[in-house]
Structure formats: C-alpha cells, structure tokens
Length: 247
Image 1 (cartoon, rainbow, N blue to C red):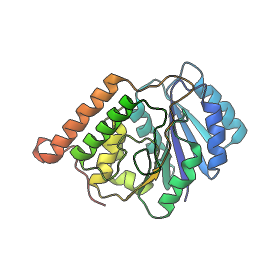
Image 2 (cartoon, rainbow, N blue to C red):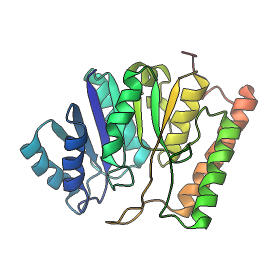
Image 3 (cartoon, one colour):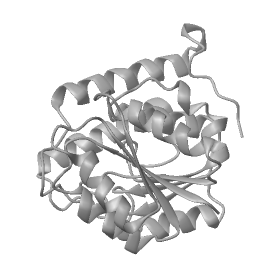
C-alpha cells in the first residue's frame, strides 16, 4: 500500500537532516513530505538539500507559522489528493523513534484503521519526564478519554498511521484545533466513528536539540476544548459540529 509520512516542521535545523536519513533507513518504502512553516533557522532549506540527495522527499514551504493542526490539515489533504493509501505522522525532534515506523505501518496492513504509538500501554514509557509532568500528562489523557469516549489510551499521541479512507470518513479537514488539541480532536472523531485502533508501545524521549514547543497556555487551551467537546457529545443540541458518520 502506497505510504506517505507527513512531517510538520518549525525551527528544527538541528534535527531535520538526521531525522530524514533515519526515516529513510527505517521505512524506505514511504514517501516523505515535509511541511515547513517558514522556519527562520533554515529548516526548509536543509530539508531540500537532503531531499535532493535521498529522493522521494518533498518539501513544502508554508508562508508562516499557523500551528500544528493547520500544518497537518494541509499536509494530510495534500497526500490524500495524491492517492496515498496509508498516511503516517510523527514529530521530527526524535521524541518519536523512526525505528517504530514499520510497526505502525504493519498494524495498518494487519487490518487496523489507525495505529497509535502509545506511551500508556504495557511497554510504553516516558523515562525522561519528572513525576509532575507524568502526572499532568496522565491526568490530561484520562480526562480526555472520559469526556470524549476515546477508544485508545494516549489521547495526545502524535505518532500515528491511518488508513486513508478513515481520514476522509471523519472529515479531518474540518477540524479546528491548531495545537496538540488537533490530536485529541482527531482521536475523538475516530472513536466516535467506530474506527479500529491498534496501540503500539513506544518509549517517548525528550528532545535533546532545539526547544520544546509545548507551553502551559497550550495545555490550558487544549483542556478547555476537550471540556467543550465533551459537553457537546453529551448534549448534541449544543452544536452539530462534531457529529460524524459511523464507519
């Protein structure tokens, strides 16, 4: 099955070259699409150089930084328009290990609609995190699962593979969240649509190059959205925005 990996980037000059080489080694059958939000550190240009050398890497230069969700909506729409049958996504900062890519793809080949690289199943872990961060993350994930009826454990996981029809089924292009809430909103729609999900355990590492883009205001905004979506789910008359058709 034709496979595309969608990678949003912003200020990742210290990671992008090594990342692309490791992805090519781990999953040579995938085409890679880098969507760079006009990084001032030259991430897009570095990606272009590696693309010329390795091939099967397209670099799309977006005009400005519009948020993670906007980049994914652009990227996923782009590859679906090209007819790819499996769409994958991941972070470029090595918090997601490229070596896991074949396992996620295999889960789709084995019949899952969605494969999620999960920190919160047996075998998954966040060894670099202090206790406070682990507790905040687990609370946020538990709250999201309860409010939204998610069918998987790692609500904010950004390491995923999708069967292309399921993305079209949930009308992913109409999502609105732009930060990590995009992962939860997409997961909510997938769960509500009855998608089959396989969770693949991963060891999530903190980045060692560059700065984290997660901030407290982003977390607060995301939990506020989860609360609103949960209320809408329980009282559909509030809004029809999040209704989906079951698979």
